[in-house]
Image (cartoon, rainbow, N blue to C red; front, side, top):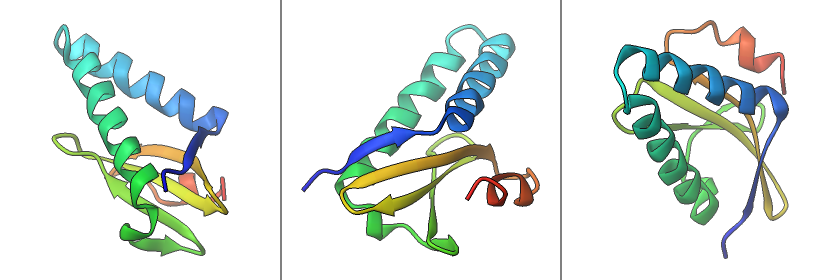
Length: 98
């Protein structure tokens, strides 16, 4: 069963900021980043429990080809994405959103 995926506003902003930064680095790279995010979100929707629990029910999926993680919680048949953050960022930033 495929779960519904919802992004919190903060996670949507994380995505927009990261995509804009990649696009500034090289034209088209922001779109490639968003394509990888879309693929990862589809995988999460299919098998959310396959990803490790990193903090109090929050799981993390690593985005292929980019050093970012998608932090999400599983609520019944819904995936709530709380953050999309670079791996070197302080984990307290996403933990404060849970």
